[in-house]
Structures are given as C-alpha cells and as structure tokens.
Length: 336
Image (tube, rainbow, N blue to C red; front, side):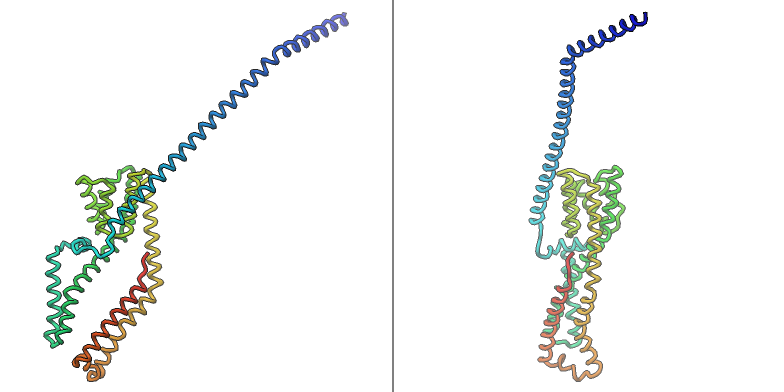
C-alpha cells in the first residue's frame, strides 16, 4: 500500500519536474529577452543621464569661458579708458585745489601767492639783503611755497582717505550681504563715514542722482582721489555691473588687499627709516655748521653774506644742496 503511494508520489514529482523543465525551456528565450531589454534600458538611461551631466558640465564650462572672456574684455576696456585719463604731469591748479578739500578758487590762490611773495621778499629787503637774493626769495615765496602747501595738503588728505577707505568697504560688504543694494550702501558711506570719505562719496551719490550709472559715478571717485586704491574700487564695481558676480565677496577681497598694502607700506617705511634719518642729518649738517660758526666766530663767516663772491658761493652751495636733497629723497622714496 505504501509502496504504491510512494510510486505515485514519485511519478507526480517527476511529472512536475518535467513540466517545469519544459516550461522553462519554452519561456527561457522570452525571459532572456526581457533581461536583455531591461539591461539595455538601464544602459540607455545611464547613458542619457551621463549625457545630460556631460552637457551640463559643458554648458558650465562654456558659461565660465564666456564670463572670463567678458571680464577680460571689460578689463581691457577699463585699462584703455584709464590710459586715456592718465595725466603724467601734475594736475591743473583748479583740480589740485579741489583735491585739497579747501573752498579756494584759482583767483584766491593767486592772491595768496602774491601775498606770500611780498612777505618772502619784503622782510629780507628791510634788513638790507642784496636784491638778487630778495628776488630769489620772492620767486620762492610766490611760486614754490603756495604750490608746496597745496601739494602737502593733497597728500595729507589722500593719506586720511586711505586710512578710512578699507573700513568703508567693510561697511559696504556688510550692508550688501544684509540685502541692501549698492546705491543704499554708497548713501550710507556718504552720511556716516568720516572726512574726507563723506564728502567724496557724497559726490558719487550726487552723480547718480544726476543720471550717471553706479560704475560711472565710482569712476569719478578716482578722478577726485587719483590713487590706485580708488581705481581698484572703480574697476571692481564696473566688472560686477558688466559681467555679474558676487559684489560683496569682491569688495571684501579688495578690502583685504588694501589692508595688506597698508601693512607692506608701513613695513617699507620702517625699513627705510634709517636711510631717511641719515638723509635728514646730511641735509641739515651744512646749515648747522654755518649757524655754529656764526655764533662762535661771526667775523669768519660774514664775508659769505657781505662780499659778492661769498654770495655767489652761497647761491651755488644752495643749488647743489637742493639737488643732493632731491636725489636722496628720490632714492628713499618707495612706491607700493
């Protein structure tokens, strides 16, 4: 009984295995075809994804290349404009007076020059100084001293501007990152900054109100303050306006560069201080010796002032001393 059931079960199992093998042999080709289709579909999909990624990367490279080309063209145009604007000589008198921050007209400057010439020539004439020395002193007082005062005031104002300019850039960076446009940032500097930044940025804001664009108004800042730092600022704003980009990051980098330039300038001044002290001692030594000799033995030194030949010697000595001082100044004057 059990033997018959075992045989039946075995026959059933064999029949099932045979049927499964027959079904697998019949369906194998279709299953393999489906697997190949799925595999091909995955490959096509992966290739499509790779092509999209490749296309996106190619588009990014093309965009970066276009942006780089645009920046280079902008820099080239700005450089050509700056070359046209560069004045290798001293600025006109009217511009120089404006750069000092004084409310002085050209006519007032000439009046001041005449008064200075009268003082420099009239006072020595009252003490009996020879006429050719009086004439020389009058020329120095009428031409040299007023222009030296203007140049000194310009340099002093430029130095004060450079001392506060990086702080103003930091304020602009923080205001732009907080969401303010660059116009409001410039107005903030024009109202809150210290002099001379306040007056100069006020001119920039007024130029915008008259219809100028932001790059054009910032370019006028370099015209009133002709320094490399203001030129950098105008170029950064112009490039951002033409080619786009992160203005706050560019201004932050510019602020860092200006601070590094300031540190380098201070280091160079410290290293050249010994040479400057030596030049000052050498330049003042002849005058000190003349004064000491006059105080100890005046009859020995007075022929230089009373005798015509002594006057010629003094004039030639002053000329050569002036040349020597200018040469030493040029040797120790480093541009950063």
